[in-house]
Image (tube, rainbow, N blue to C red; front, side):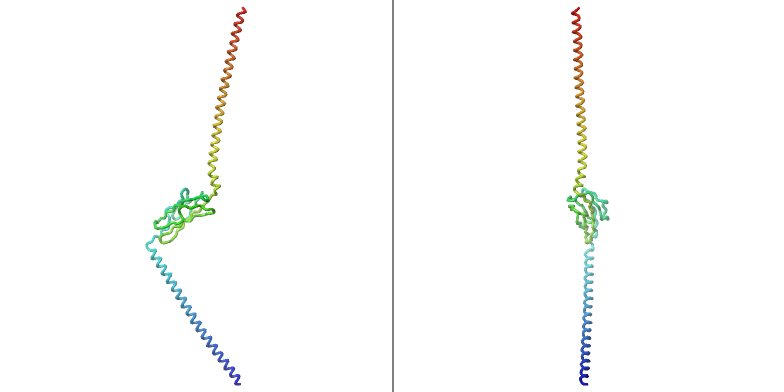
Length: 225
């Protein structure tokens, strides 16, 4: 009987100890989660405060600065952009450029305080499809103008360049043929004139010979009488 009582007492003590341990752990976890929650709130509040300070700093720095990021002029020397330039239009097309050629892009900002990137002399690379022109306002805002490229192959460009030369060659050959024909015609006319003169001389000489023979015959007949 005493042995059973000892077992019951030991079991109760074990339950009490386990209960105490669980309560202590729960309390510790509660305090721990509370601490993390307080830490997260403090961190979020600090981040919001930092972001607000940065925004206020940017606003303060941008006060009195120009936000004009338009172009006043955009052109490519020796080429024509499509459509015609307008500062509100940001996309254009450039035809007729060839791989390896160099073009000069003139881009003037509408505001002298703005800066332009991507303008000047640009070499056309193989498979290049566009050129980007960035206009950066004094406040830092950016407006991008795009020039789309219709690139021709070098052989096509050479063929286009050769066409006028071929036409010129044909015209030159035609002129040479005309001059040759004219020269041959003149030579033929000269030959005909010479031939006519020779025939006329032969006829005249023949007539003179006949007249001479007639005169001789008359003289001989007079002598016989």
